[in-house]
Image (cartoon, rainbow, N blue to C red; front, side):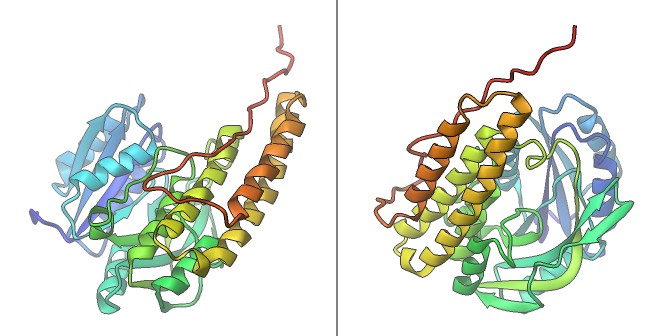
Length: 324
Protein backbone atom coordinates (compact mmCIF):
# COMPACT_ATOMS: atom_id res chain seq x y z
CA UNK A 1 0.00 0.00 0.00
CA UNK A 2 1.14 3.51 -0.80
CA UNK A 3 2.52 5.20 2.35
CA UNK A 4 0.81 8.40 1.23
CA UNK A 5 -2.49 7.36 -0.35
CA UNK A 6 -4.43 9.87 -2.42
CA UNK A 7 -7.61 9.57 -0.38
CA UNK A 8 -8.25 8.98 3.32
CA UNK A 9 -11.64 7.44 4.12
CA UNK A 10 -12.64 8.16 7.73
CA UNK A 11 -15.26 5.83 9.25
CA UNK A 12 -16.35 6.73 12.82
CA UNK A 13 -17.90 3.71 14.59
CA UNK A 14 -20.22 3.47 17.58
CA UNK A 15 -22.85 0.77 18.18
CA UNK A 16 -23.21 -0.15 14.50
CA UNK A 17 -22.13 -3.81 14.39
CA UNK A 18 -25.27 -4.69 12.40
CA UNK A 19 -24.43 -2.24 9.61
CA UNK A 20 -20.63 -2.11 9.70
CA UNK A 21 -19.76 -5.05 7.38
CA UNK A 22 -21.97 -3.62 4.62
CA UNK A 23 -20.24 -0.23 4.99
CA UNK A 24 -16.70 -1.63 4.98
CA UNK A 25 -17.45 -4.00 2.08
CA UNK A 26 -18.61 -1.05 -0.03
CA UNK A 27 -15.32 0.74 0.69
CA UNK A 28 -13.23 -2.35 -0.04
CA UNK A 29 -14.91 -2.78 -3.46
CA UNK A 30 -14.09 0.73 -4.71
CA UNK A 31 -12.89 0.99 -8.31
CA UNK A 32 -10.46 3.70 -7.15
CA UNK A 33 -7.91 1.76 -5.12
CA UNK A 34 -5.34 4.30 -3.88
CA UNK A 35 -6.93 4.99 -0.51
CA UNK A 36 -6.64 4.23 3.17
CA UNK A 37 -9.65 3.46 5.36
CA UNK A 38 -9.36 4.76 8.92
CA UNK A 39 -11.85 2.86 11.09
CA UNK A 40 -12.28 4.96 14.23
CA UNK A 41 -13.71 2.90 17.10
CA UNK A 42 -15.16 5.60 19.35
CA UNK A 43 -15.29 3.43 22.46
CA UNK A 44 -18.08 1.30 21.02
CA UNK A 45 -19.33 -1.38 23.47
CA UNK A 46 -20.37 -3.84 20.74
CA UNK A 47 -18.34 -5.83 18.18
CA UNK A 48 -17.26 -2.88 16.01
CA UNK A 49 -13.58 -3.30 16.93
CA UNK A 50 -13.63 -7.06 16.36
CA UNK A 51 -15.30 -6.68 12.97
CA UNK A 52 -12.86 -3.94 11.96
CA UNK A 53 -9.91 -6.03 13.04
CA UNK A 54 -10.92 -8.70 10.52
CA UNK A 55 -10.92 -6.14 7.70
CA UNK A 56 -7.54 -4.85 8.86
CA UNK A 57 -6.14 -8.39 8.58
CA UNK A 58 -7.42 -9.04 5.05
CA UNK A 59 -6.75 -5.61 3.51
CA UNK A 60 -3.70 -3.51 4.42
CA UNK A 61 -5.49 -0.33 3.37
CA UNK A 62 -7.79 -0.69 6.39
CA UNK A 63 -6.52 0.59 9.74
CA UNK A 64 -8.26 0.29 13.10
CA UNK A 65 -7.93 3.11 15.63
CA UNK A 66 -9.44 2.79 19.10
CA UNK A 67 -10.16 5.73 21.40
CA UNK A 68 -12.38 6.55 24.39
CA UNK A 69 -15.90 7.61 23.50
CA UNK A 70 -15.99 11.28 22.57
CA UNK A 71 -18.84 11.50 20.08
CA UNK A 72 -19.04 11.79 16.31
CA UNK A 73 -17.22 15.13 16.09
CA UNK A 74 -14.32 13.86 18.16
CA UNK A 75 -14.07 10.70 16.02
CA UNK A 76 -14.01 12.71 12.78
CA UNK A 77 -11.38 15.08 14.16
CA UNK A 78 -9.32 12.06 15.22
CA UNK A 79 -9.52 10.76 11.67
CA UNK A 80 -8.43 14.10 10.23
CA UNK A 81 -5.42 14.10 12.58
CA UNK A 82 -4.17 10.72 11.37
CA UNK A 83 -5.24 10.90 7.72
CA UNK A 84 -2.34 10.76 5.25
CA UNK A 85 -4.30 11.39 2.07
CA UNK A 86 -4.41 14.59 0.06
CA UNK A 87 -8.19 14.25 0.01
CA UNK A 88 -10.53 13.10 2.76
CA UNK A 89 -14.06 11.68 2.89
CA UNK A 90 -16.27 10.74 5.82
CA UNK A 91 -18.47 7.66 5.64
CA UNK A 92 -20.95 7.07 8.44
CA UNK A 93 -20.59 3.45 9.53
CA UNK A 94 -24.26 2.59 9.07
CA UNK A 95 -24.21 3.85 5.46
CA UNK A 96 -22.59 2.54 2.29
CA UNK A 97 -21.28 3.89 -1.02
CA UNK A 98 -21.44 3.11 -4.73
CA UNK A 99 -18.39 1.28 -6.11
CA UNK A 100 -17.44 4.40 -8.12
CA UNK A 101 -17.86 6.84 -5.22
CA UNK A 102 -14.17 7.57 -4.67
CA UNK A 103 -13.35 7.54 -8.39
CA UNK A 104 -16.06 10.01 -9.39
CA UNK A 105 -15.53 12.32 -6.41
CA UNK A 106 -11.76 12.40 -6.93
CA UNK A 107 -12.03 13.02 -10.68
CA UNK A 108 -14.59 15.78 -10.03
CA UNK A 109 -12.06 17.57 -7.84
CA UNK A 110 -9.02 17.06 -10.07
CA UNK A 111 -10.65 17.68 -13.45
CA UNK A 112 -12.29 20.90 -12.24
CA UNK A 113 -9.47 22.13 -9.99
CA UNK A 114 -11.97 22.06 -7.11
CA UNK A 115 -11.21 21.61 -3.43
CA UNK A 116 -14.60 20.01 -2.70
CA UNK A 117 -16.76 17.61 -4.69
CA UNK A 118 -20.40 16.86 -3.90
CA UNK A 119 -22.66 14.00 -5.02
CA UNK A 120 -26.32 13.15 -4.83
CA UNK A 121 -27.50 10.52 -2.38
CA UNK A 122 -30.27 8.04 -1.76
CA UNK A 123 -32.07 7.41 1.49
CA UNK A 124 -31.71 3.73 2.29
CA UNK A 125 -34.19 1.77 4.40
CA UNK A 126 -33.96 -1.76 5.83
CA UNK A 127 -30.27 -2.27 4.93
CA UNK A 128 -30.72 -1.08 1.36
CA UNK A 129 -33.81 -3.12 0.49
CA UNK A 130 -35.51 0.19 -0.29
CA UNK A 131 -33.54 3.16 -1.70
CA UNK A 132 -35.22 6.48 -2.44
CA UNK A 133 -33.30 9.11 -4.48
CA UNK A 134 -33.15 12.61 -2.98
CA UNK A 135 -33.60 15.10 -5.81
CA UNK A 136 -32.51 18.33 -4.13
CA UNK A 137 -28.95 18.54 -5.51
CA UNK A 138 -28.37 20.79 -8.54
CA UNK A 139 -27.37 19.43 -11.93
CA UNK A 140 -23.77 18.55 -12.71
CA UNK A 141 -21.86 21.82 -12.43
CA UNK A 142 -18.90 23.66 -10.98
CA UNK A 143 -19.80 26.45 -8.56
CA UNK A 144 -17.64 29.20 -7.16
CA UNK A 145 -17.38 29.48 -3.40
CA UNK A 146 -19.82 32.38 -3.06
CA UNK A 147 -22.64 30.72 -5.01
CA UNK A 148 -22.14 27.31 -3.39
CA UNK A 149 -21.97 28.75 0.12
CA UNK A 150 -25.19 30.71 -0.40
CA UNK A 151 -27.00 27.52 -1.48
CA UNK A 152 -25.46 25.55 1.36
CA UNK A 153 -26.51 28.05 4.04
CA UNK A 154 -30.05 28.07 2.67
CA UNK A 155 -30.12 24.26 2.95
CA UNK A 156 -32.05 24.13 -0.29
CA UNK A 157 -30.27 22.47 -3.23
CA UNK A 158 -27.04 21.85 -1.28
CA UNK A 159 -26.87 20.38 2.21
CA UNK A 160 -24.25 20.42 4.96
CA UNK A 161 -23.96 16.67 5.54
CA UNK A 162 -20.33 15.71 6.07
CA UNK A 163 -20.71 12.43 4.21
CA UNK A 164 -21.59 13.12 0.55
CA UNK A 165 -18.51 15.25 -0.08
CA UNK A 166 -14.80 14.91 -0.76
CA UNK A 167 -12.53 17.60 0.67
CA UNK A 168 -8.96 18.64 0.12
CA UNK A 169 -7.53 17.83 3.53
CA UNK A 170 -5.72 21.19 3.56
CA UNK A 171 -9.10 22.93 3.94
CA UNK A 172 -9.14 21.59 7.50
CA UNK A 173 -5.47 21.85 8.37
CA UNK A 174 -4.62 25.19 6.74
CA UNK A 175 -7.67 26.96 8.16
CA UNK A 176 -7.75 25.37 11.63
CA UNK A 177 -11.21 23.90 11.03
CA UNK A 178 -12.50 20.99 13.07
CA UNK A 179 -15.93 19.63 14.00
CA UNK A 180 -17.25 21.22 17.21
CA UNK A 181 -18.55 18.88 19.91
CA UNK A 182 -22.28 19.37 19.44
CA UNK A 183 -25.22 17.99 17.52
CA UNK A 184 -25.53 19.25 13.91
CA UNK A 185 -21.76 19.65 13.86
CA UNK A 186 -21.78 19.30 10.07
CA UNK A 187 -24.18 22.26 9.73
CA UNK A 188 -21.67 24.27 11.77
CA UNK A 189 -18.65 23.04 9.80
CA UNK A 190 -19.44 22.56 6.09
CA UNK A 191 -20.07 26.29 5.45
CA UNK A 192 -16.67 27.12 6.92
CA UNK A 193 -15.04 24.65 4.53
CA UNK A 194 -17.02 25.98 1.55
CA UNK A 195 -15.89 29.51 2.43
CA UNK A 196 -12.24 28.57 1.91
CA UNK A 197 -12.76 26.50 -1.25
CA UNK A 198 -12.44 28.36 -4.55
CA UNK A 199 -14.56 25.79 -6.45
CA UNK A 200 -17.08 23.09 -5.59
CA UNK A 201 -17.70 20.39 -8.23
CA UNK A 202 -21.21 18.90 -8.26
CA UNK A 203 -21.85 15.39 -9.57
CA UNK A 204 -25.38 14.39 -10.59
CA UNK A 205 -24.75 10.72 -9.81
CA UNK A 206 -26.29 9.00 -6.79
CA UNK A 207 -23.18 7.65 -5.09
CA UNK A 208 -23.97 7.68 -1.36
CA UNK A 209 -26.61 5.58 0.42
CA UNK A 210 -27.72 7.09 3.72
CA UNK A 211 -29.40 4.57 6.04
CA UNK A 212 -32.53 5.97 7.70
CA UNK A 213 -32.83 4.11 10.98
CA UNK A 214 -34.32 4.37 14.45
CA UNK A 215 -31.88 6.13 16.76
CA UNK A 216 -30.62 8.74 14.30
CA UNK A 217 -30.20 12.34 15.49
CA UNK A 218 -33.34 13.55 13.75
CA UNK A 219 -35.37 10.50 14.85
CA UNK A 220 -34.48 11.15 18.51
CA UNK A 221 -34.83 14.94 18.54
CA UNK A 222 -34.76 16.46 22.04
CA UNK A 223 -34.33 19.95 23.42
CA UNK A 224 -30.51 19.70 23.51
CA UNK A 225 -30.57 19.01 19.79
CA UNK A 226 -33.02 21.87 19.24
CA UNK A 227 -30.59 24.18 21.04
CA UNK A 228 -27.64 22.89 19.02
CA UNK A 229 -29.55 23.38 15.77
CA UNK A 230 -29.81 27.08 16.58
CA UNK A 231 -26.18 27.12 17.76
CA UNK A 232 -25.07 25.71 14.41
CA UNK A 233 -26.65 28.72 12.67
CA UNK A 234 -24.92 31.06 15.12
CA UNK A 235 -21.57 29.40 14.28
CA UNK A 236 -22.13 30.16 10.59
CA UNK A 237 -23.21 33.75 11.30
CA UNK A 238 -20.23 34.28 13.58
CA UNK A 239 -17.81 32.93 10.94
CA UNK A 240 -19.02 35.09 8.05
CA UNK A 241 -19.15 38.12 10.36
CA UNK A 242 -15.62 37.45 11.57
CA UNK A 243 -14.43 37.17 7.96
CA UNK A 244 -16.24 40.38 6.91
CA UNK A 245 -18.61 38.78 4.38
CA UNK A 246 -21.81 38.89 6.43
CA UNK A 247 -23.73 41.15 4.00
CA UNK A 248 -23.24 38.63 1.17
CA UNK A 249 -24.91 35.88 3.14
CA UNK A 250 -27.35 37.84 5.28
CA UNK A 251 -30.45 36.85 3.20
CA UNK A 252 -29.38 33.18 3.21
CA UNK A 253 -28.86 33.23 6.98
CA UNK A 254 -32.26 34.80 7.54
CA UNK A 255 -33.85 32.15 5.31
CA UNK A 256 -32.14 29.33 7.25
CA UNK A 257 -32.97 30.89 10.64
CA UNK A 258 -36.64 31.20 9.71
CA UNK A 259 -36.76 27.64 8.44
CA UNK A 260 -35.19 26.22 11.62
CA UNK A 261 -37.32 28.44 13.86
CA UNK A 262 -40.43 26.82 12.35
CA UNK A 263 -38.90 23.33 12.58
CA UNK A 264 -38.17 23.96 16.25
CA UNK A 265 -41.78 24.87 17.01
CA UNK A 266 -42.78 21.38 15.89
CA UNK A 267 -39.89 19.80 17.85
CA UNK A 268 -40.79 21.66 21.05
CA UNK A 269 -44.46 20.66 20.82
CA UNK A 270 -43.47 17.08 20.04
CA UNK A 271 -41.12 16.90 23.05
CA UNK A 272 -43.78 18.09 25.47
CA UNK A 273 -46.33 15.65 24.10
CA UNK A 274 -43.88 12.75 24.34
CA UNK A 275 -43.04 13.65 27.96
CA UNK A 276 -46.66 14.39 28.90
CA UNK A 277 -45.37 17.57 30.50
CA UNK A 278 -46.39 21.02 29.24
CA UNK A 279 -45.02 23.10 32.13
CA UNK A 280 -42.12 24.63 30.18
CA UNK A 281 -43.61 24.54 26.69
CA UNK A 282 -44.43 28.26 26.75
CA UNK A 283 -40.95 29.06 28.03
CA UNK A 284 -39.29 27.07 25.25
CA UNK A 285 -41.45 28.63 22.55
CA UNK A 286 -40.50 32.09 23.85
CA UNK A 287 -36.78 31.19 23.92
CA UNK A 288 -37.05 29.80 20.40
CA UNK A 289 -38.52 33.15 19.30
CA UNK A 290 -35.78 35.10 21.15
CA UNK A 291 -33.07 32.98 19.54
CA UNK A 292 -34.61 33.54 16.12
CA UNK A 293 -34.56 37.33 16.63
CA UNK A 294 -30.98 37.07 17.88
CA UNK A 295 -29.90 35.13 14.79
CA UNK A 296 -31.47 37.54 12.29
CA UNK A 297 -30.30 40.66 14.11
CA UNK A 298 -27.49 42.61 12.46
CA UNK A 299 -26.17 43.67 15.87
CA UNK A 300 -23.76 40.89 16.68
CA UNK A 301 -20.07 41.11 17.54
CA UNK A 302 -18.17 38.17 16.06
CA UNK A 303 -15.52 36.27 17.98
CA UNK A 304 -12.71 33.91 17.03
CA UNK A 305 -13.76 30.30 17.51
CA UNK A 306 -17.10 28.72 18.40
CA UNK A 307 -19.65 31.04 20.10
CA UNK A 308 -22.28 30.10 22.68
CA UNK A 309 -26.02 30.67 22.68
CA UNK A 310 -27.05 33.60 24.95
CA UNK A 311 -30.03 31.59 26.25
CA UNK A 312 -31.25 28.01 25.91
CA UNK A 313 -34.43 26.01 25.93
CA UNK A 314 -35.10 23.47 28.71
CA UNK A 315 -35.79 19.76 28.37
CA UNK A 316 -39.20 18.88 29.87
CA UNK A 317 -39.20 16.25 32.62
CA UNK A 318 -40.69 12.97 31.51
CA UNK A 319 -43.97 12.45 33.39
CA UNK A 320 -45.14 9.34 31.59
CA UNK A 321 -46.78 6.87 33.93
CA UNK A 322 -44.51 3.86 34.40
CA UNK A 323 -46.10 0.43 34.24
CA UNK A 324 -45.87 -1.56 37.46
